[in-house]
Image (cartoon, rainbow, N blue to C red; front, side):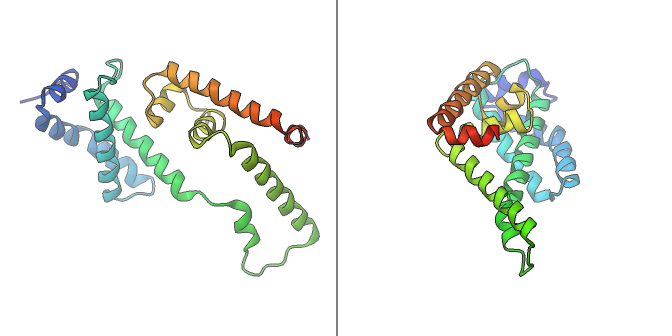
Length: 193
């Protein structure tokens, strides 16, 4: 029996998900696997990421949070890719200055040491500024400011129910960040430079 995309959420809610899983693995998984293998992953990574995306998708459908404005296949694919990109980012995070400081016995001249000191000071300043706003706000502001992601993409990555919820949370996080900066005028002076 061929299942159409728009029937999938209803079948999941009715508990007829055996066919749905088969259909999603047949149609979406090969594309996910191809993308992940081309982007520093292996087949096992693709299975893990896809399984995680399916679980999230199922949860959204069961809780009536899946919007019919998305196509099911595109949505599950996008969830999978976002999860893979998040995994890559987490795996590749490195403390830049500590890596430079422990450079296997290489001596830095005075100018390079000054530059390292400025980097370290900037890192401490940012750490101080972001330490009290919460990890979720840091992640949200990073997606917004650094990666310039749209609210729809952020909603998918972070599990928000709507774009409006993302925008409201961004506003709250920015307010928290501004409040932290205003608590310590020396931070504002250093930022303005």
